[in-house]
Length: 171
Image (spheres, rainbow, N blue to C red):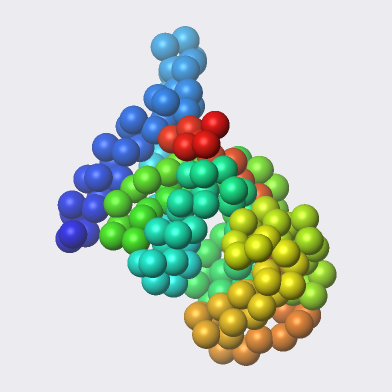
Protein backbone atom coordinates (compact mmCIF):
# COMPACT_ATOMS: atom_id res chain seq x y z
CA UNK A 1 0.00 0.00 0.00
CA UNK A 2 1.40 3.39 -0.89
CA UNK A 3 1.51 6.29 1.54
CA UNK A 4 -1.47 8.16 0.06
CA UNK A 5 -3.64 5.01 0.25
CA UNK A 6 -2.60 4.50 3.85
CA UNK A 7 -3.32 8.12 4.72
CA UNK A 8 -6.78 7.84 3.16
CA UNK A 9 -7.49 4.65 5.16
CA UNK A 10 -6.35 6.40 8.34
CA UNK A 11 -8.62 9.39 7.65
CA UNK A 12 -11.64 7.14 7.00
CA UNK A 13 -10.85 5.08 10.11
CA UNK A 14 -10.51 8.24 12.21
CA UNK A 15 -13.89 9.61 11.10
CA UNK A 16 -15.57 6.34 12.11
CA UNK A 17 -13.54 5.80 15.29
CA UNK A 18 -14.16 9.26 16.73
CA UNK A 19 -17.92 8.78 16.30
CA UNK A 20 -17.92 5.24 17.72
CA UNK A 21 -15.68 6.31 20.63
CA UNK A 22 -17.99 9.29 21.23
CA UNK A 23 -15.17 11.80 20.99
CA UNK A 24 -17.38 14.24 19.12
CA UNK A 25 -20.65 13.92 21.02
CA UNK A 26 -20.85 17.61 21.97
CA UNK A 27 -19.84 19.12 18.60
CA UNK A 28 -23.44 20.09 17.86
CA UNK A 29 -23.55 22.17 21.04
CA UNK A 30 -19.99 23.33 21.58
CA UNK A 31 -18.39 23.06 18.15
CA UNK A 32 -15.41 20.98 17.11
CA UNK A 33 -12.76 20.44 19.76
CA UNK A 34 -9.07 19.90 19.09
CA UNK A 35 -9.20 16.34 20.40
CA UNK A 36 -11.66 15.23 17.72
CA UNK A 37 -10.44 17.56 14.95
CA UNK A 38 -6.83 16.42 14.63
CA UNK A 39 -6.01 12.97 13.32
CA UNK A 40 -3.91 11.21 15.97
CA UNK A 41 -0.53 9.73 15.09
CA UNK A 42 -0.74 6.25 13.55
CA UNK A 43 1.83 3.61 14.41
CA UNK A 44 2.28 -0.12 14.94
CA UNK A 45 3.52 -2.06 17.94
CA UNK A 46 6.77 -4.00 17.62
CA UNK A 47 9.43 -3.95 14.93
CA UNK A 48 8.06 -6.43 12.38
CA UNK A 49 4.69 -6.98 10.68
CA UNK A 50 4.31 -10.21 12.66
CA UNK A 51 4.91 -8.44 15.98
CA UNK A 52 2.51 -5.67 14.96
CA UNK A 53 -0.24 -8.20 14.26
CA UNK A 54 0.28 -10.30 17.38
CA UNK A 55 0.48 -7.29 19.72
CA UNK A 56 -2.55 -5.68 18.08
CA UNK A 57 -4.49 -8.91 18.65
CA UNK A 58 -3.65 -8.68 22.37
CA UNK A 59 -4.99 -5.10 22.42
CA UNK A 60 -8.20 -6.10 20.64
CA UNK A 61 -8.66 -9.02 23.06
CA UNK A 62 -8.31 -6.68 26.04
CA UNK A 63 -5.12 -8.36 27.25
CA UNK A 64 -2.57 -5.69 26.33
CA UNK A 65 -3.19 -2.36 28.10
CA UNK A 66 0.39 -1.15 28.35
CA UNK A 67 3.44 -0.58 26.21
CA UNK A 68 7.02 0.38 26.91
CA UNK A 69 9.66 2.28 24.98
CA UNK A 70 13.18 3.44 25.66
CA UNK A 71 13.17 7.13 26.59
CA UNK A 72 16.43 7.45 24.65
CA UNK A 73 14.57 6.42 21.47
CA UNK A 74 12.00 9.17 22.01
CA UNK A 75 14.85 11.65 22.41
CA UNK A 76 16.74 10.50 19.28
CA UNK A 77 13.55 10.60 17.20
CA UNK A 78 12.57 13.96 18.72
CA UNK A 79 9.20 12.42 19.65
CA UNK A 80 7.24 13.70 22.62
CA UNK A 81 6.62 11.26 25.44
CA UNK A 82 2.91 10.41 25.49
CA UNK A 83 0.74 12.06 28.12
CA UNK A 84 -2.58 10.98 29.60
CA UNK A 85 -5.27 11.78 27.07
CA UNK A 86 -3.00 11.20 24.05
CA UNK A 87 -4.84 9.37 21.27
CA UNK A 88 -3.15 6.94 18.86
CA UNK A 89 -4.32 4.97 15.86
CA UNK A 90 -2.78 1.50 15.92
CA UNK A 91 -1.83 -0.10 12.61
CA UNK A 92 -1.66 -3.79 11.79
CA UNK A 93 1.39 -5.39 10.20
CA UNK A 94 0.25 -4.36 6.72
CA UNK A 95 -0.16 -0.72 7.75
CA UNK A 96 -3.97 -0.71 7.97
CA UNK A 97 -5.60 1.20 10.86
CA UNK A 98 -7.27 -1.19 13.29
CA UNK A 99 -7.62 0.43 16.72
CA UNK A 100 -7.90 3.74 18.52
CA UNK A 101 -6.33 3.90 21.97
CA UNK A 102 -6.08 6.59 24.63
CA UNK A 103 -3.12 6.92 26.96
CA UNK A 104 -4.31 6.81 30.57
CA UNK A 105 -1.02 6.99 32.51
CA UNK A 106 2.70 7.40 31.81
CA UNK A 107 5.71 6.92 34.02
CA UNK A 108 9.42 6.88 33.26
CA UNK A 109 11.38 4.42 35.36
CA UNK A 110 14.71 2.61 35.10
CA UNK A 111 14.42 -0.74 33.30
CA UNK A 112 15.17 -2.68 36.48
CA UNK A 113 12.34 -0.88 38.34
CA UNK A 114 9.53 -1.84 35.93
CA UNK A 115 7.16 -3.84 38.14
CA UNK A 116 5.15 -7.03 37.73
CA UNK A 117 1.88 -5.13 37.42
CA UNK A 118 3.14 -3.23 34.38
CA UNK A 119 4.65 -6.39 32.89
CA UNK A 120 1.24 -8.06 33.13
CA UNK A 121 -0.41 -5.03 31.48
CA UNK A 122 1.92 -5.44 28.49
CA UNK A 123 0.18 -8.79 27.95
CA UNK A 124 3.09 -10.55 26.30
CA UNK A 125 4.24 -14.16 26.73
CA UNK A 126 3.19 -15.42 30.20
CA UNK A 127 2.74 -11.81 31.43
CA UNK A 128 5.39 -12.29 34.14
CA UNK A 129 8.05 -9.75 35.07
CA UNK A 130 10.78 -12.27 34.16
CA UNK A 131 9.45 -12.73 30.63
CA UNK A 132 8.88 -8.97 30.26
CA UNK A 133 12.52 -8.34 31.16
CA UNK A 134 13.79 -11.04 28.80
CA UNK A 135 11.65 -9.85 25.85
CA UNK A 136 12.32 -6.16 26.38
CA UNK A 137 16.04 -6.48 27.01
CA UNK A 138 16.26 -8.26 23.65
CA UNK A 139 14.01 -5.68 21.98
CA UNK A 140 15.83 -2.67 23.45
CA UNK A 141 19.16 -4.20 22.41
CA UNK A 142 18.23 -5.20 18.85
CA UNK A 143 15.78 -2.48 17.79
CA UNK A 144 17.12 0.64 19.50
CA UNK A 145 17.10 3.91 17.59
CA UNK A 146 19.68 5.29 20.02
CA UNK A 147 23.34 4.30 20.23
CA UNK A 148 23.69 3.99 24.01
CA UNK A 149 23.20 0.23 24.20
CA UNK A 150 21.15 -1.59 26.80
CA UNK A 151 21.55 -0.82 30.51
CA UNK A 152 19.57 -2.04 33.51
CA UNK A 153 19.14 1.57 34.61
CA UNK A 154 18.12 2.92 31.19
CA UNK A 155 14.94 5.03 31.39
CA UNK A 156 11.83 3.26 30.11
CA UNK A 157 8.59 5.03 29.21
CA UNK A 158 5.79 2.88 30.66
CA UNK A 159 2.51 3.83 29.02
CA UNK A 160 -0.91 2.55 30.06
CA UNK A 161 -3.78 2.86 27.63
CA UNK A 162 -7.37 1.89 27.03
CA UNK A 163 -8.99 0.71 23.85
CA UNK A 164 -11.58 3.20 22.58
CA UNK A 165 -12.43 1.61 19.23
CA UNK A 166 -13.26 -1.03 18.30
CA UNK A 167 -14.60 -2.36 21.55
CA UNK A 168 -12.89 -5.44 22.96
CA UNK A 169 -13.40 -8.69 21.05
CA UNK A 170 -13.79 -10.64 24.31
CA UNK A 171 -16.11 -8.18 26.04
